Image: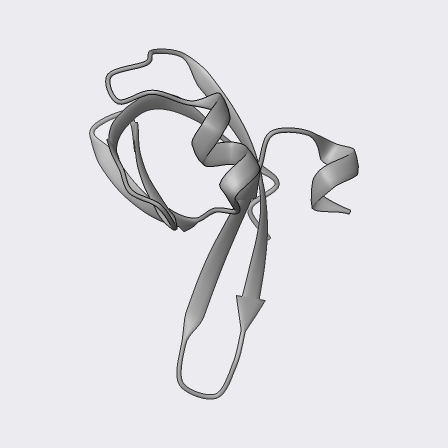
Length: 70
């Protein structure tokens, strides 16, 4: 499981964040609370994550705190 990602905000929309971690862009689904807390181009951001596995997809969800994620 991916517990968290630390990197730079490459792109952000209402429901997704792309975070650049060492040159790899991770697309993360986010709630509006995360969208409000981050800005495009922000550097050295930590996003706590939860990976959801279904029959047809791997979905990564991101939150600003461990408590929010749990």
